[in-house]
Image (tube, rainbow, N blue to C red; front, side, top):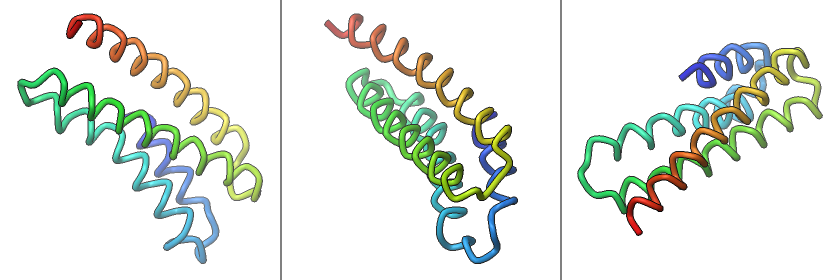
Length: 107
């Protein structure tokens, strides 16, 4: 959730003509990450939960890509973008650890 908030703050600094481009894409992918985790957490099937965590990982990678594009285009403060990328790496480690744990439990 912290990553979503940070991505929204970063996207606010993008050029206004990016509202339907990178701004929208960054926000959508960032929101998708916790939404996919939450969607399946309430269900009982371990396999489905693992599947949706994999989708969340994809959303995380998409978010990272949008942030890297923003850096290359000079759309936002590099400090904020790097902070978001560092937070993304932390989330990636947590997701990876959770997935390994659940897969071991399933097996």
